[in-house]
Amino acid sequence: MLEKVNSTEDLKKLTIKEKEILAEDIRKYIIEVVSKNGGHLASNLGVVELTLALESVFDVNKDKIVWDVGHQTYVHKILNGRKEELKSLRKLKGIAGFPKTKESETDCFNTGHSSTSISAAMGMAKARDIKKENHSVIAVIGDGALTGGMALEALNHIGSSKTNVIVVLNDNEMSISKNIGGINMLLSKLRARRHYTISNQSGRKVLDKIPIIGPVLIKIIRRIKKGIKQLIIPKMFFEDIGFKYLGPIDGHNIEDMELILKRAKELNEPVLIHVLTKKGKGYEPAELMPDKFHATSAFDIETGNPKKVKEKDYSKAFGEKLVRLAKKNNNIVAITAAMKDGTGLTEFAKIYPDRFFDVGIAEQHALTFAAGLAKEGMIPFVPIYSSFYQRAYDQVIHDICMQNLPVIMCADRAGIVGADRRDTSRNIRFIIF
Ligand SMILES: Cc1ncc(C[n+]2csc(CCOP(=O)(O)OP(=O)(O)O)c2C)c(N)n1
Image (cartoon, rainbow, N blue to C red):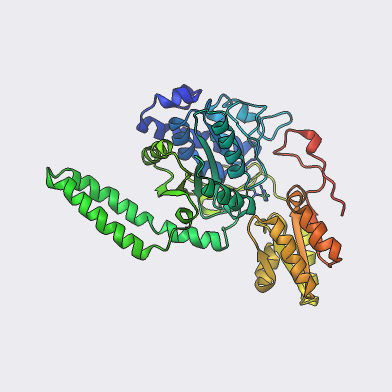
């Protein structure tokens, strides 16, 4: 099927059954490429059906689909003229691992740093309205990225302005590691609604077959269920802040997703569609270890084992040293913004769970939180990838430096960074505080 599909025009001609076959072909292809070149695997395997549904219902040449972070756009690239090019992923002068407007007009906004999609979508939607154009604007954001402050700032803005934007929340319960925090608690309550949606659908199919009284029964049952739902399910955050909430829906069921996306397309208000997906879907090692397969180096498809054994890197050495220091000093604490493994804090978190804080994708909060801890005598260590430190320069200067607080800021990946970046001028990063 993959051979037959070279564009979203080809995709739109397929039946649901054919799209399901295509989904499996795309999975196999992505696994094949990433096992050779390395790349972001688990997130891409999780959005195969979601991408097929989105790009079947919307027109990528007219509508705007903004992918948050953008590490999950391999499927989109395959469908939009870059099937062969994907083989050059993470190679010199190869295809970018993230959306790049320079690469294709269907990549409508460059992403990489988390939690920007809803703001960008709002900007595009406002521009559309001012220009009196008529197309859909969609932000696709993960539950991890939703923990970033910017995403919440944008939801706050859209909800009250009643702008026609569709937010697709791709909820796989994972950031890079397990997602954490109050937003995750809220989502887990909403996930519970799924059982109601499912039983609704299967019951409906049976009742539909009963002539005359079938539809009446459906109406009565729906009313009763709505009542029960209101009682059991807590007040709905998204509705309260001005969004129409649709879902939760199975993110691997193309037919259901197409239906719900078509419905959202017709509404002229902010809509949030809650889609449940499985990170790593369809490849067992990635389903079992979605964190390890979030971004991976080349691996053996049979076993899932890396082709090269990883040598001890700077992050690991940093983590080991921090554990040794923390043994001698009870005031040492460590903070991560959703990058526990990447920044070398895995051991620290295991040994000192009470002195370890994963604050979600929230670099700004991480640093002012550290400032508060330091003000009261703690010694906070905050390792953050240099690129993501950009998010928190104001907090570094205003909350830490200007009060001369002893926060230990550690910049990971501050040297030459390869792999996902095509724009080499931005590969060398220096951080000077
Ligand atoms: C500002 C910022 N901090 C950290 C990261 C590193 N990062 C990339 S993806 C990711 C997790 C995203 O989780 P989610 O949005 O749920 O997407 P998923 O991979 O689960 O599909 C993180 C922390 C980033 N891209 N940007």
